Image 1 (cartoon, one colour):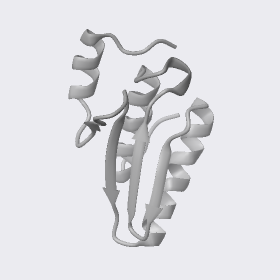
Image 2 (cartoon, rainbow, N blue to C red):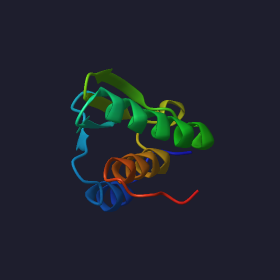
Image 3 (cartoon, helix red, strand yellow):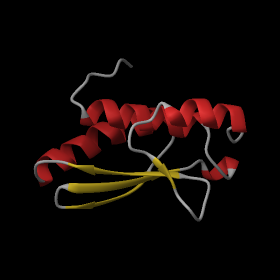
Image 4 (spheres, rainbow, N blue to C red):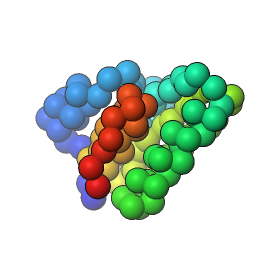
Length: 101
């Protein structure tokens, strides 16, 4: 897996809602805010199942109802399509949408 080209980056990242580039590395970040801890943890569990299938695991922290996520592909030393795909899954789960396997 190779890092996104400039053209791919412009196209794919513009389709992500609320994700921002991190200033000090080739990664994207987003904070998800849920109603309570149980909802946040349930979302993390759903994401973990998809991340395991994709063999692509997020960097994340959870404090009560907040989950901070950073995505990058360490093997590629930067952003790849895998990061964008996992970000889409996270957004869909947070919106309460079902994601097809």
